Length: 343
Image (cartoon, rainbow, N blue to C red):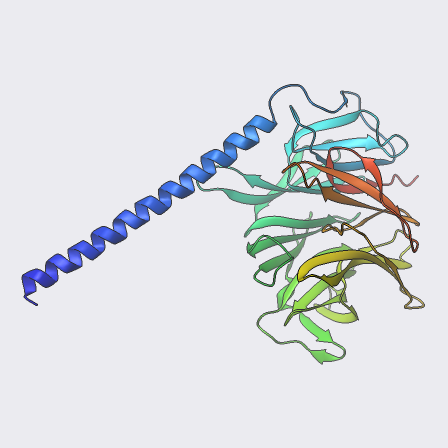
């Protein structure tokens, strides 16, 4: 081949690469525009839910509003005594939300070109007090009464139903203290240190100012672990337990328990008594994929997407007893958190 021919060949290859790059950028742009258009369509018109401009005070449920129309995706609040009643809406839009009497943690998608993700911390009146970028798609968040904030983002993949995902879970405080990425903590499974590079951590729940529970995964297995912020260490408690949620009295932890069902991921609910180590299983015909929340010492809440309508979801309640069945608790809602006012 002559130098001239070789030069022409190189130019053609670069031209082809340039065309591919332009086409790829164009497809990403089109997808982003279409996604933004679908989101805009959901947020126009009157809200499908009953909305109030009065302050929902006292014990309440804070959640993501998924009622079609104005207010879709925004932080919402209803009284615990009247979960089906009118909801107060805040202006901030979130993908995942968790709240205490003082703070709200909001994981959100900033749609645009490029699309970015962030965590925003708000006070009880939903005024923004801090924010920082997320490394990927929002997945889980928990905030404690003293202002510890845990966030999990999908760095790759978008679902726990497959093994082809990677997460980043970090803990920091509202006061600015950074407790780091939990994958960098010392992790012990049945007394043996886990050093595998495929380890993932997600689904934090806070027990005290220093103690937390979380999920650790490696080699296709998952464990619920107890973590210590000061020691930066986690120890396994039980296998096949994901997205733990500690009860208000600290006596039990509820979590997702995976079972094989025709090769597809299916999670039931399980509750572990921390004193006796007795596990109570609550099989769910439909399964679910959410981090549970305790309504009270005997009742759990979780979100369920509607199978017949993408983007719509509801919150269900279930008693933490064998053979209990889910009941609709809040229609058009997602990511519930219970705010208890201690007097």
